[in-house]
Length: 377
Figure 1 (cartoon, rainbow, N blue to C red):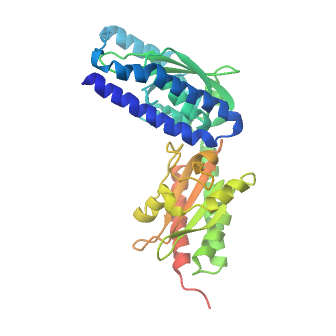
Figure 2 (figure 1 turned 90 degrees about the vertical axis):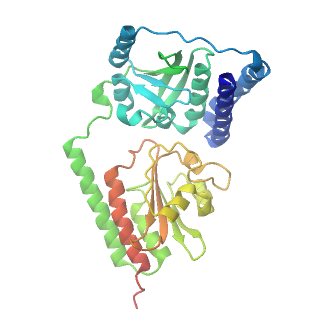
Figure 3 (figure 1 turned 45 degrees about the horizontal axis):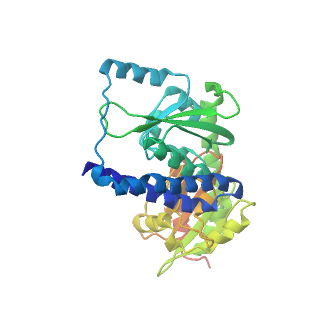
């Protein structure tokens, strides 16, 4: 029964990875060879592993698990944390279990934040499917792997990821040890990676937020009210560029949501057309915000279909290289949701912070009041 359950889980993992490979078809042409290599590898895995396993399932016996001395295990834990090379311990689905000190400095991600989240969430979209596929192969015991990936915070710097299998003491499943190294340079010193934000920088960001709130208030007070589409268009103009790379506005009508405004970077004209033609009802994040009236703040969104697909069939989040987003319902409490405003940041731009989300929540209430106010005569 244990072998049957393990085979079922392995098959489910394979189906999930195939779905990710399908979603990765929309990556830039230069990144397609990596995706193709991963697809070929998955096909080889089915032919060489899953099918023979299925045929001989009845005769497959459980494998023994070696025990590790407790004192030696404590020593290994200390070595893991202190080794001066960025190392992460993940499971077969790349969910981070441990991140050593060097890895937190190298990636700029705190260990407490990374634990429990997929390591692929910190990589560029084009690299996620290949990395997940290779990690699954290592966890199956098919040997060590190495591939080049890119961190979302530093997409221009290639990183060499080396994966090797590790069986933790007393656990039935194999984990994967991931070693990260810059492909062309040394590990950056702590002074060169993101760390605690200086007080001056924090003050500057707060001032920028206050300037944004002032610009939004000015735009709402200086223009006509009572016209939801017009109000949203003015608000989108304030937010675009200075606060978000993409601004998507949807108005709640009597029957359904309708998309009124899409502002995108200057080099994404075609992508903007695809998003503008999209049905908001096909965007899970927008639908959830319209129904529940709560703000969503995913950083490095893992689900490529969270904002649906454009008219070409490509996931919007992948095509726009979205690294963080804000999906804000426009409502006053109590009261119905009058629309949904979605903001994207892409590439190496800093992710939305909680302070920025709070400021956007305040501006959303002002927007809602302007949309519902009676028209001036």
